[in-house]
Image (cartoon, rainbow, N blue to C red; front, side):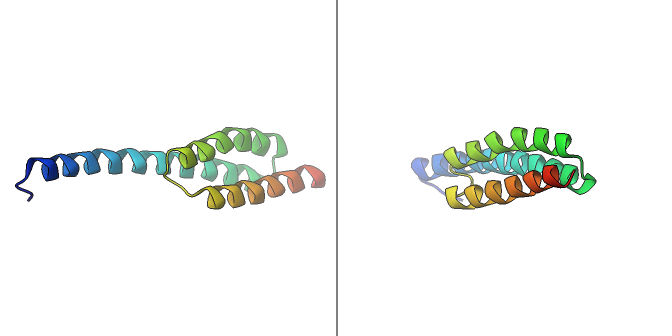
Amino acid sequence: MANIASAQKRIRQTVVRTARNKARRSRVHTFVRKLEEAIALGDHSKAREAFIAAQPEMQRAVTKGVLKANTVSRTISRLSARVKALGASS
C-alpha cells in the first residue's frame, strides 16, 4: 500500500475510473448484444432501432476514452452493413 498522500489519492482515482470505464464498456456491449440478437432474428425494423440506439453509445465510449475511435468506426460500419443487408433481403 502506498504511504505518500498523492499516491494514495492516485489509487482512489484509479479505482473510481476503472469502475466507471467498466460500466461504460459493459453498457456498450449490452447495446451491441441487443443489436446482434435483432439481426439474428431477421427483424429489420427491430435491428434498425437497436442500431440507432447502439451507435451513440459506442461514439460516447470513444469520446470518454474507453474504446478506440478506429475500432468503433469499423464496428459501426460492419453492423450498419449487416442491418442494411437485412433490409434488402426482406
